[in-house]
Image (cartoon, rainbow, N blue to C red; front, top):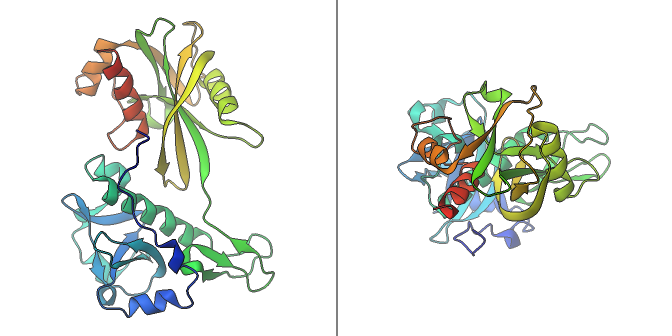
Length: 292
């Protein structure tokens, strides 16, 4: 899960070029990924690229280079956009909708576009003095013309943890209140000020599930642009089998056997599990496969 993979070429060296966005918008062959309300158009297993001329009012940024080397721009458009809205509504999809069906390059493109578009929409005024910000670095930063402050896209770290029983035979999952108990998943929470990732794991599991853990190990991470998170995936072993849901954020916690996990992965219950787009699903699948 940590091997080098096919990634989007972000062409970072172009960001400091003066008027690069204007130049690329006038360059034949430049393609555009349009984001509207956190969704992109998807056709089959690819993100749809359109011509520059087909996009109206938008916040623009440089996404990078496509596989063929052509420039890829981001156009973050208002929710109601006539020229773009003429596309079939069912083609506008988000990360949860697409699931795990996109390849690495297309998935990277989708997540980057959603995350950057969200920041461009939200970060319009300086948090220091309130003045309107100007886009710099090809959309990857904003500068305040009043006080000179610089602003960059923000990423909030969160941990997500798969906890196995002391004997390794069962996996502990919890039903989050946001899902009204309909789905069970790994335990997750944001890193607080002054915490290490390991401290967050112990605190969150203690708060949400009343469980103490040992043998923490990092597995992998996943960008999650809702609105600006990165999920840091861990595995851990419970010190004992005593658990207690907090009753607020987590409604119920359950120890599930490998057979129960396998049946749930197949969609047959006894619990619903996260979709294939999430790192939670991959952590659960990894544990299941290791116990074969």
